[in-house]
Length: 231
Image (cartoon, rainbow, N blue to C red; front, top):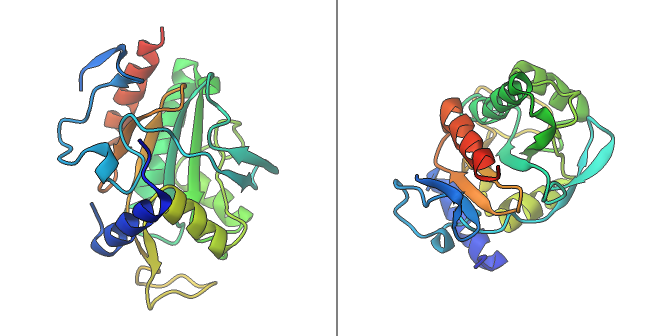
């Protein structure tokens, strides 16, 4: 059961301030291929963000590098989807979060299933993260921003970013005193929760990686296992 928005928002805010917070089978555990994470102490319903067995939230955002709008659930029935939440001025975990998706993109291209995944990094700093900044940042982390499977989503405003990231996805973020709209600081402009979501092609979350960035090998292994479960 999905958490109410108010509950997600409360838990996300707490997580942002504190920086926190399997066996395979052919859809053997209800709607997922992967079993519940063995290192997860809390049940999915107690977490602020979408976790194992829950539905991937549906939001529609601009994808400026492809001059279109993308709905996060648009790939159901066809692809696995990976979603993460970043700001490009981040010098700590965000390059790893986005870089993981870039490595998944490279793996999919090498293995010939690049048309069967959707990679959706979402910025929560749309004032600074212009389309050109998102393009340069994508290339910086090793992604091909021209590929159809790479959709870097940019909310239309700061208010929309909060609505989508904090309220809908339950991923907390807060500006720090170092924040300015148009300059890179030596300090972090935001504190935020680090979350990466892997959803299967039926739209159910297989993994909600948190805290920090998972290893690329872990994400790729989980993705391959999920894909195998649909064969």
